[in-house]
Image (cartoon, rainbow, N blue to C red; front, side, top):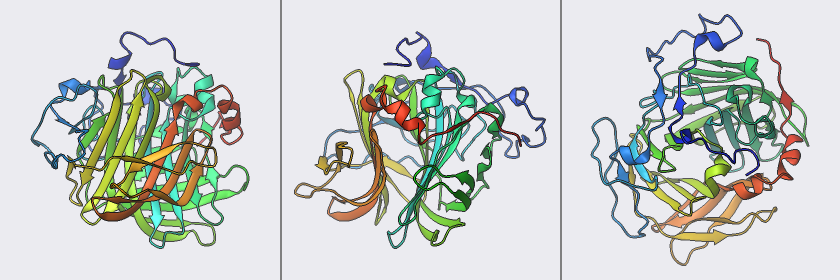
Amino acid sequence: MSDNTSRSPHASRAELHTAPTAEHTDDDRGFRADVSGLGRIPLRAIPAWNDGGLRASNRQNENQGTIFGGRGSASGGRGADGDTLRQACGRGDLERPHFDIEVPPGGYAWWYIDGVSDDGKRAVSVIGFIGSVFSPWYAWSGRGNPGNHCCINVATYGRGGRFSMTDRGQTALRQTSDMLTIGPSSLHWTGKQLVIDVDEISSLPIISRMRGQITLTPPALTQIELPLTADGAHVWRPFAPIARISVDLEAEGWQFDGHGYFDSNFGTRALEEDFSSWTWARYPTQSGATCFYDAERRDGTRLEAAIGFTPDGQAAHVSAPGSARFNRTLWALPRATRADPGHRPKQIKSMLDAPFYSRSVVETVLNGERVQGVHEALDLNRFDSPIIKPMLACRVPRRAQWKF
């Protein structure tokens, strides 16, 4: 590993704290008023074996597991490899997103949104990063100050699609429990909707302003998370696997409604330190949505999670077909997702195609139902290559200074 080869003996117990007011350079005490009433208390990454959750099954034909719907949900067996659903804990986001966290050195937090238009012709993704895991500048810095490498990445897919990912410094970051502001753009949880105000400059090949608003409306939020490693160093928090999205950007044709999705990932170590690769997918279904998270860990273990979600926010491990490969990307990145025997997944729409990362709309068949959803494949061996980071710097400019 090029950036994080030495692991602290306490790294897996690193804490995620809510950010103290004094660390901001601007006098924003009024701005930071915590309207939700959540206290700023130290929040700890909790190892998977302490959660009493429900272990994910690697067996293809197992019956649906215990449903997690909220407080007091039933618990199941221990998942020693970090493949257990449990109630969301450690960040104050059990019932709603909570953006006012302090990410420890070496760590990261991201909030991810995607949406596909009802006609399937256009798509969008937004990621708010603190400790931007795919920024070469964060890696080159030694990852000592995640807040000094933050960004809101916005990408549109379809005719005239554009991409913006600007690595910004500490002065661009403002946080409250309800809002994440990074430079000119922000994510705001209103209590019922996630409202994203976009004001960015896209990178090559189309350099232009990306401005407008994206609104995601979920019928309900889940109260669960999935530790991705046994020590709790990496956690997936799916807030709204089922949602509607409304896109209104200041560009011709970029106003649409469609199906949307909202989740977060949190970690106390670099991704490439603990994973060699992963695939993730979310597929809307007749009964709600199904998500798959499959990963190869550095310690030789595998994560194989299949989780079903209902419109009222309940979640459970579900039976799922096995993994099936489909066409490689233009960068020859291998891809796979779940599919019924005899069916081969196929790409319907390319979204993002990078040397180490792919995002696309994929069609597959799950338990007899033909579905289309968003799929990603990530090769962290490629990302860790010293060749990749200079290439990324051409697409991810660094803007260290910002004044509100």
